[in-house]
Image (cartoon, rainbow, N blue to C red; front, top):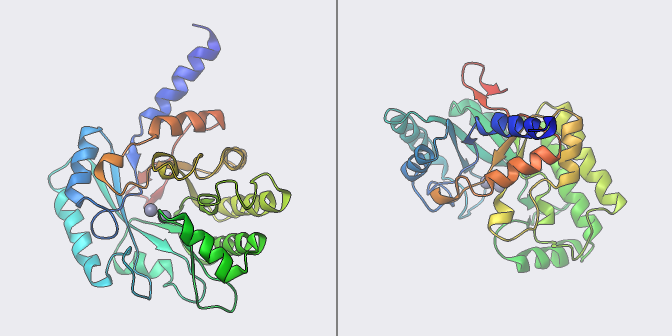
Length: 292
Ligand SMILES: [Zn+2]
Ligand SMILES: [Zn+2]
């Protein structure tokens, strides 16, 4: 075996030894399977750690977040499941950052004794406006309608608002992991803007630098690929390369909403991380209470 082949084999082994998934959604929020089903799937996959990250409550009626009054039950059920599995179970919420609206992430972490917080932007709030642009979900029409109605079809203004909201989240919220950093590209599908346009590159790269400055873990999120809503991981290759250059710690998330999504595109994510220069994934150290 040539040295280069040996090195590749070694790095694959290093990454494979830390099988885990810290980003999952059960029937407590918009997921389709109960917690127990995820634990069974994690056991089958010989995962070491499994984190539950229901969408946190937001201050308006919705059908995607966990109900505030259900959070104690959610935590108690995770504690109960821990008694009958060797997979280390972790408690988290995926918190939405909406300027002048969302609850500070730290409040959830403290109140419910969560292990970590995933922060993300799914709803973009235009300046001086109470309406929200939903950039996620399965329907491209909602993205297109929001762009037309909330931003007058000005894609640069809309996308800039998304990134500025992301900057504000990283700068003002205490969070451990940033979710799907460039989710804004999902429903764009190369129609309204191109990811190599200088104005877009400047915004996206600024976000990566902020992730680095604020010691936040970056996830490589596979959901867009297996749901066939996007042709790339979040974040895209160029941003992952920059993250590697800055030595930002990474985890692989499938953002599973069903138990059988727990390791979808995990192998491909490992290959992508190798291509971008990464040799290691971080894992959650329960004693230290952080990813390292
Ligand atoms: Zn999300
Ligand atoms: Zn999620």
